[in-house]
Length: 99
Image (cartoon, rainbow, N blue to C red):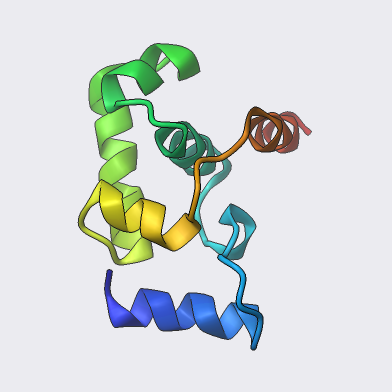
């Protein structure tokens, strides 16, 4: 993970020792949905039908997400956001997108 992305997240968190949330990012609502599903352990091919998208579209979202967060690997995504997102967190993101 790039030090710039991590230091930006740290700055937003202040002196708190907790992991950043998806709300602390500049990701679009759809990108947040993709991240949430990836953090639940889904592959890009599994995410696609879940969101009604083509696998290539999910791949494009994934590349944009990694670029925005300054990361290169899925492992860094888990390191950045910690444990997998719960179904409740995913439902919250879905509701925000429809409002």
